[in-house]
Amino acid sequence: MAAAVTPLGAATVIGNTSHDIAVFLRPRRVSALPGVGAATARTLTRYGINTIGDIADTPLATLQRILDIAAGRHTAPRPEVDISYPAKALDAPAIPSASPTRCGTTVFPPAQIGTPP
Image (cartoon, rainbow, N blue to C red; front, side, top):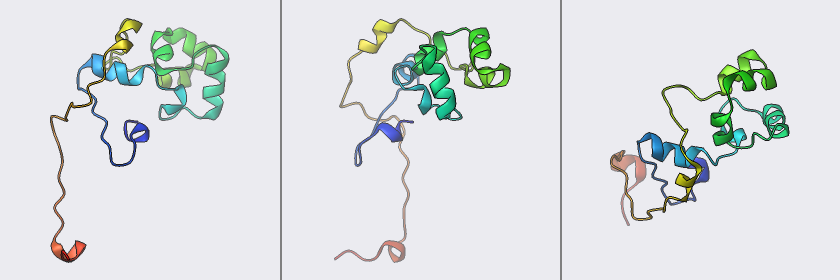
């Protein structure tokens, strides 16, 4: 999801706390969730459930009635990811200089990438 909203050549850094994850996820459209197709997104939107935060704030029983039992369970937030917090937290400042705490590197042999000019 982060890669989908990141411009080419840039990096999106999301902290690993529940709060940081919630700040990133809550405003995203329901259609950004894996497994939520166009028909499910339309159905949720008809009920005023437009964002992932709206899903998090909707009781599981309500989601089950709107979608059906299986889809409601699939769409509801998993208990290990707590994205419920006050809406004012969305006003948290962005920190453009933040850097990831971990970074991966792939080393390619010169034969794969050619020799420098």
